[in-house]
Length: 416
Image (cartoon, rainbow, N blue to C red; front, side):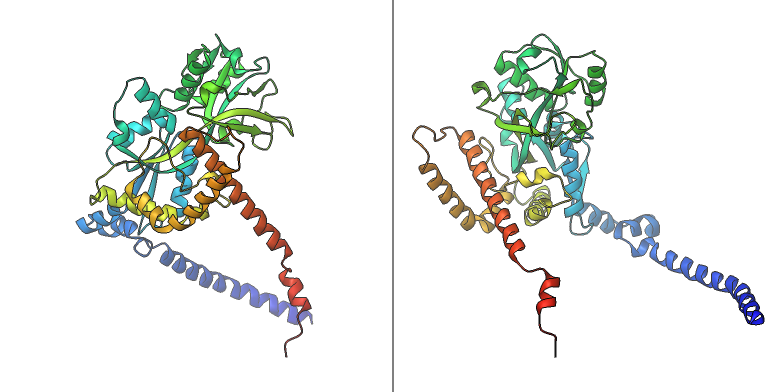
């Protein structure tokens, strides 16, 4: 018995190196085959095999690449840009190239003037502000919106001694860098409410440190909730200051709330903080139909609209659930390719929904029906979200009522 064990061990000692070399050789061969750039993609083939790629290869790489100007790191725009690339980019029929931007104001300039930028995420009140102040004229004719994305909430972080936004009168308030849209919203809100703080333009992360050190009195960040940046604020001396939906703000902004689920370190469990919100939109230069740039945006629009349901499920940003492709944006023209897609795919369904909404309005008490386009649109969006939530609840109830697959199998008669 001992001789047999010894023989087995000796055989293992002799065979092990041979087996190891065989496995190593096979692994290296397989790894080399899998890592051959020529077998991976056209782009890598151009780089690693051709050396000096042909004009046809260059043209193919550039033909279906669509650039999307997003926003600053940590903001909602840049997360949306990453989501767009993750879902839509297949590397062949379309490549979506998100670009880290500087904010809404810079993105408007980039869409208009920066070569190679096809699409950008901007805030609706930014362009209104620039036109109202006389900085630009007729820019809306050069731009078109693809879809309204979501509402961005105004976050005001300050020491707990600051109990209302009016307490910021005369205080030092950071409103981010002047390339972004936060300062536009902040300046508009303060102006409408008659509040005169001392505004400073500091990048958000630096502003947070200055706020903690007492060098400034508050910081404003207009970002879609839950904001990754705001969620990282953890200081027991700070809180979110409420922003009331005052009549002076109701022409351009919408009411919203922040809750403990959004920011558990800033809002006590079960509590909410009132604030306002402003629409973020996906915009493009208003290219003429038939041009190559129009073709690229058309390609992007069709792919985006066809996959909108994918974006509205995990693991993508929860703000995607607010996107309603049919939402109108007063004062803006929709990109023709986007309007054509909606007319082709959603006209019948949207017509029925709109008729239901009109019936809903007819049931409201006299004097409560909204009169302005913005208020009507806000109410319609709330109605669409209510319908969507109702359908999801019905789907969950139906799923819960269905027997579990394992239970169904156990109760089924045995196969013959």
